Image (cartoon, rainbow, N blue to C red; front, side):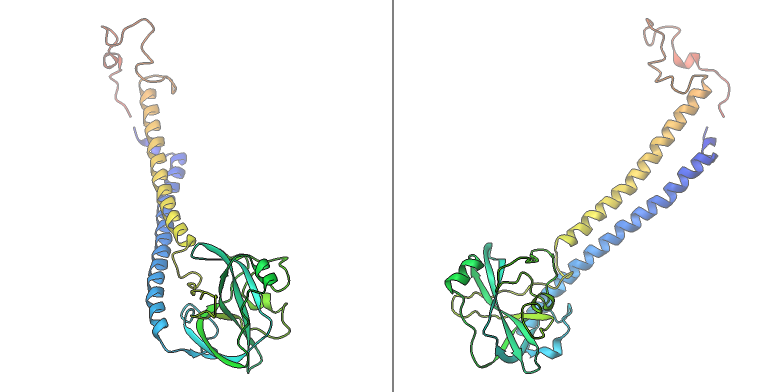
Length: 289
C-alpha cells in the first residue's frame, strides 16, 4: 500500500519536508531570539538610563564616539554659542507639533557641538518671522546634557529636510550641518535637561536598535510566520499522502484514479444501501499490495 513512498517523486517530496520543516523552525527561533534580545536591551536601557541620569557628567571627549552604552549619558562641554541658531521643524512632544531650537557650541578644540536647547510649539516658519526664539547665552558657558547619536536620513520620525528655508535643518547630524556652517561639527549632539524661558526640554531618545520599536515587533511577527510555514509544509505532506493512499486504494479496487467517492460510484437510480449495492460485497477479495 505504501510502496509509493519509495518512488523518486516521493523521495523528492520527503526530502523537501525533511529539510523545509527544520529550516522554518530554525528561522522562527532565530527571529524569536532577536525579539527577546531587543526586549532585554530595552529593559537594560531603562535601567542604564535611570543610572545615567543620576551619574556624574563626564567630559564630552570621553564619551565619543556615541555607542549604545554612552547614548543618554550626561556629557559636559565648554565653549561659546554661535549667534546663529537653527530650527528643526516637524518635531512632536506630548502629541503636539513643534520644532527644536538648535544652537552650536563652539568648543576650545575648534569643533562645534550641536545643542538642542528646547522645544517650542507651532510652525518653525512662523517662529522665525516673529522672532519668538530665545537667544542663546553670551560669553563662555559650560553645558551639561544627555548625549545623543547623530540622526540618520529617513529614519523613523525624522524628515530629511530637503528644500527647507534658510535657518532650518531637518536632521541633526554632522553631515547635514557641515553644509550650513563654516566649521567642523561633532558627529553627536546633546539635549539640555532644562529649557530657558518658554523652551521645553527635549527628553533623550533610546539608541537605535535598543528599544521596542516597530522592528522589534516585526521580528515577533516573522517568528509566527516561520512557524506557520512549518505547519503548512507538514499539512501539505499529509494531504498529498492521503490523496496518494486513496488513489492506490482505487487502483486496487479496479477503479479509475478519478472515480470519485463511494457514494458517487453508486449507479444512477439505485438507492444507497439497497441489496446488491453493498460496496464491501462488491470489493474483490484479492490481497492488496
